[in-house]
Image (tube, rainbow, N blue to C red; front, side, top):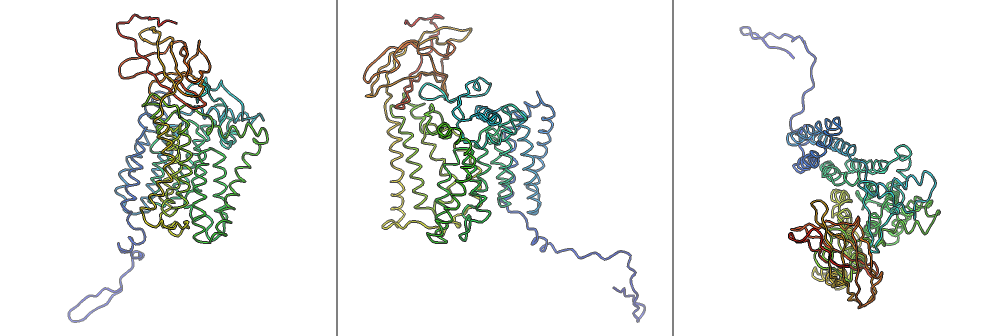
Length: 597
């Protein structure tokens, strides 16, 4: 470029000396925005919510670590700094690419906090104890199924599942995959930590996998649901095999309507089928999701390919999953088929004592009992069938929710604790982010003559659900089978007043023989079984008898005030429960009042 000098009326030109190399022109702001636009406000919100969720439980972990593992506490303190920085940057970052990097930082922080939590609490609960013992049996070539291990339940923090028949389950009641994965770990770490390490590793894998599979604006939501809220790390540290199933189900659920597209299963579809079969070989919850997925997959492919090709691709998908499940289970089925089958079906037919937050609480917590608890089981089975039928009939409407519908069934079951609802919640997120309603807009639905209006379809849906809710009404409204009259024997141990025995009169008001078993309840959980010192094992229909029962360890505290204690009497066949309050000793009563034997 030339400089121009004016001298008088003449113009002189001279060449400028280049002292610096020329730099390329910078892109205008508009062009920069086009190559890396500003993040959506929804994306910012997801990142910020995930960052905030990391505070949940962190203070408790830091407090525990300061007393036992200061180095872990120091890592948690650094994680606090990361949370604060990520929170600020999530609102300040100007480009999507930079915000995705913040999402990655939030994920790394969450993994670090979860690892710290595992280092502080990794002994596990009954699931971990059973899985570790099963892993040990595998290493030594011993049978896994049908083998009672009662000594495991003497360990600290290891609960026991009591049954309505007055006993408890001491056997392994899960499919074998988690135990197989834990076996090599147990060869090195010979404790329950072998099982919890597998499930915690599965949770970490679930989180990272879901993070990468989701669209960028949703990724931090995966961090929050899997790690930030704290409930899934809690279950992983307890050694729940369902966490292993969760890790395998994530690739199955993400964009599931694309499976078998064009009539070819392909490597991706085959991999998804293998993961589904492996998930079913890890924990029984995967069994409930499977039929919903198969119905949805067939409907989507039939809308695209027609009935014959849709059936063929769905059959190949199902067969691949079934072969995978069979391969994992083959060794154990060959060892002892009957014991293996009883083991993997145990949670479905064990008749465990009532527990949970579902409708069974009407009969357990809020009334004096029910003589028809079996109807809660019937209700959950009928609801499962109704939801499957509704999914088939209205797949375009219900298809996006196939990852949520299976868990509604457990709300009506006799054992309906929150773990059945929340363990698979990352799958809800996966469907929300990758399975929009548009993906099922062309899915096949059976033609329903005369059912074209919304009112008619609503009436059909209500008709499908009505049998299940009728069973709930029968179970909840049934009267308790026994009339109990209690005469407690009181004593004091130290400053505590309680019961050392109860004499009771029981009247069987039903037409069936009943074999009662007794326990006490304060709040939501039942005690160990009380000992029947005298009284008949079976009470004939419409008869009465006197019993003397004693609490475990010979003494049961009975506080007064707003914390009442109840005696429960349960039977397994038919499933019934009767509840009666245990009166607290009067303040002016003597320290020991003999109720008479």
